[in-house]
Length: 399
Ligand SMILES: Cc1ncc(COP(=O)(O)O)c(C=O)c1O
Image (cartoon, rainbow, N blue to C red; front, side, top):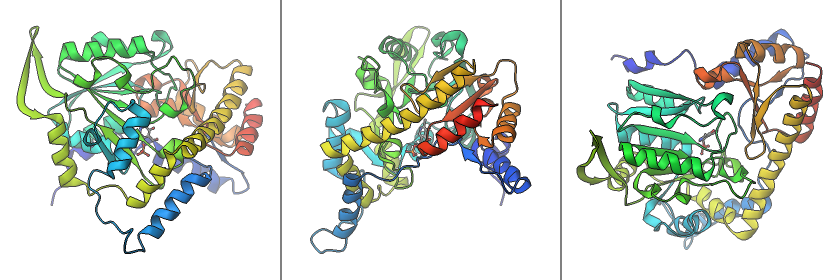
């Protein structure tokens, strides 16, 4: 039996296991060190009351004759309707919303939908799953779209190849940058003109506090013809371990190819019908306990609790950002996102990572792990207990 040859094309080690490996090595060499992590984007705060009750009651229902349910396919209809109402002003029918076990898992399945012959374009830096998942699929044509201080962290759209699959994440992981309505309009217009499909990752939309900033690609006119959106309960509801998310695939979305200025529809199949087929073949529905938790999270009390959780992490982010800025380090993010992206001009980001670990015993994430344009940057994650963040910031003060 031979190995999937695409595995060999991956860069050595996924970013976060490598960060964990270095942390372990440091801990072994310094057994008395109290290491604090501002590294991974893993939630730390307990589930709020209403959401916990939704999960507990859901689990109890499964033990009753009248409450028991088995497979739920693309999700409880009431949950899909509620998602449409809360996040999309009811503009999608329940069958355009596919409830899943999380955004990362859906990104992987979407890569199966588009296959290995596709060309992809990604923000650089970006969440590693877009590129690594595509490489595992055998995708060879990858365009990196640099997003740095020079272009205010929004890519040059003219660099997007025609007929490509474009991954776009806003608020962005790792930079914390949030695209404006005008910028997303330009992205949608470009995608439509070039026959591209956008996979819009809105996993951090709950952190947007500036009301002028869009929380969904579907706030932009024309997006239904060119975009899919992935979303997640992980960060707002603390469901990183519970696992619940969704993907919106509008029925209007078509496979199109643009060549020399004219647009052709490639097949009669819609992206929606293909996605339905893939989900039916490779996925058996999200945990129904998690879905009851999701319904509780979307009640008015649950929504207030989710906002409270996000506010807590944003409070951490504000502390981190002001600590770094007081030291004269240039930063973005942290105001509408749980990540602060700090610039260390001319430095190798793994070296900065090592220096912060050694001097402050604080784990961060080196920017280079998110793509070539991340070199010279460090990502600070705001997911942590307040007292740990405060202690880490005290230590960062002397770095
Ligand atoms: C940009 C982005 N998308 C998706 C995910 C994963 O979401 P989920 O937990 O729903 O799989 C993450 C997790 O950190 C992320 O940073």
